[in-house]
Image (cartoon, rainbow, N blue to C red):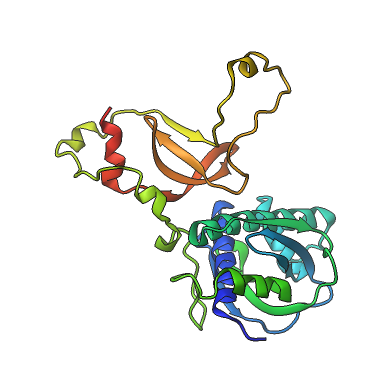
Amino acid sequence: MTESSSLRAFFAVWKESCAAVLSRLGVAEAFAILSPSAGAPGSDAVPGYFLLQGGLRGQLLCSAAPADAVRLAQQFRSEPIDASREITDSHRSAFAEFLRQVADTAASIWKLRCGSEIQLKFEAQPAGPFLAASATEIKLSGGALGENVLHLQTDQQLCDSLEAAMPEAVPGSAPSASGDAASPASPSAVSEPVLRLATQASALPQNLDLLLDVELEATIRFGAREMLLRDIFSLMPGAVVELDQVVNEPVELLVAGRLIARGEVVVVDGNFGLRVSEVATPSQRAEVLRL
């Protein structure tokens, strides 16, 4: 199976997404390295199918050996790592949720780099006959996790969709021939819109040190919507207000009412947090002082 540049770029996004999710799960020095497939996964591999829609179409199969799936599930559930344990339904569910988070992160990175929105729907079983057209492996390691292998296989429809969507690989997104460690906060993940937030870039104030202890209000914005006054007065418990933002789009961080960063919502010690994926330049962030 030969890999096109667009397919390598797609696999590279999954590699970075795996490392990003492991980091969020508390894996110290999380690494994800792409390597050529050493063969089809065993018949006992734990599978997770994804149906791609939107900017890309086709099917993707992610699978891992039972011992690897158990370790990833234990890390996801913040349990002691013990690969000798027999895999259970709860392990399979946690492994599936790990894959879902990787898929959500991959969709966000793909949109930032390619400007194309994709949806990845998790399926316990393939949506139809699945014939692998290309395959690779992602080696995951870090902390007490040890080395784990995630097998990725795509069908021909996804390969063709990638070629049609991006005939040439996105610069900076394809891995080297030997496979390189993922860097979740790599510069290539930063897109232009945030870097153009300020209409005029200005130098940092000379007296900035005097203001660094000033507290400013930070707000996470999931989206917005204009509503008629009559609709506002008719709101009742249980009503749903639809926003102008889809699930996979990054949320916005506003400081003093100014947009300074975008990212994805995470949970840290039971509290909501924001993992920043795009950030404005220091001079643009200094614009919050012009109140």
